[in-house]
Length: 345
Ligand SMILES: C[S@@+](CC[C@H](N)C(=O)[O-])C[C@H]1O[C@@H](n2cnc3c(N)ncnc32)[C@H](O)[C@@H]1O
Image (cartoon, rainbow, N blue to C red):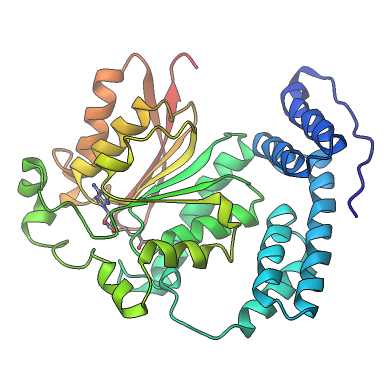
C-alpha cells in the first residue's frame, strides 16, 4: 500500500510555483487519484529537478510498483513485471535494486533484433555513440536543471537510435517528459524543394537510398514505428512515447497543445527543417529556453545558403521582434545546438 504523508508547504516566492504542483498532487492523492498525483509530482520535477518533496513522494510510488513487479515476476508474468519495473525506475532512477532487476529480466527475454540499438546513419557507431550521448546529455541537463518544462521532440527518427539515447537520458536525469517522434519511416520526401535539389549533399546523392526503414520492417516482421515504440517502452513507459508516422507536412497539421523543451532536428533537408520550425511556431510549441539541436548543421559544406542553416535564418528573420538565439554546443563534425530566446516571454 502507498501511504501519503504531510508535505511541507514552501512559501517563498521562488518556491511558490513548483509548490503549487506538489500541493495539487497531494490533494489528488487524498482524493484517491494516484494517476493525477503522480502527474502532479512529475510536473514539479520538470520545474525543479529532483525537487525533494516531489521526489520523496514519487519514491513511494516507485517502491509500490517495484513490489507489484516482483509479484508479477513470481507469478511468471515477465512482460508485466518489466512494465512495472520501467514505471518504478522512471519514478526513482536512483534505485539500484530496480535497475538491476530490470536489467536481469530484459536479459532473460528471447533475443531479437532491436533497431533502436543500431546506429544506421553513421559508419562508426562507437564514436557516434560517445559524441551523441555527450551532446544529448548536455542539452537535456540544460533543460532539466534550468526548469524548462516541456516535451522532447525528435524530427527524423529512422530506426530510433537517437530516440533511445533521449529516452535513456530522460530516465537518468529524472526528467519525466513525453517523447514525440516524427518521421515518415519511408525516407525523405520524394519531391524535393528546388533549394534542396541544388544543395551539395542532395545533388551528390548522399541521401538517395538509406532512409526508407520500411524495408527493415519487412525483415523484422513488424512495422518500424511499432517496433520502436515497443523497444523504447522498456526504457520509459509506453504512455510517454508518442510516435507520429507521416511526412511533417501532414503530422504537424494536428495541434499538439504541448510546449517543446528540446527539439532534435535530424531531418537532413532545408525544406523539412523549415516545416518543423514553422509548424512548431504555428502551434505555439516553442518557448523561451527551448533547445534546438540541428544534426545536419554543417551539411552542404556548411554553406549558409543551404540546408538547416538557411532554414533557421529564414525562420528567425521575419520573427526578429519575437525570437533570438544563443549558440550552445557544437558536436561531432556536423551538428550544433542553440537556445531559443523569446524577447517578451
Ligand atoms: C538521418 S535520418 C535520422 C537519423 C536518426 N535520428 C537516427 O537515430 O538514426 C533522417 C530521417 O528524417 C526523416 N525525414 C526527413 N524529412 C522528413 C519529412 N519531411 N517528413 C518526415 N520524415 C522526414 C527521414 O525519413 C529519415 O528517417
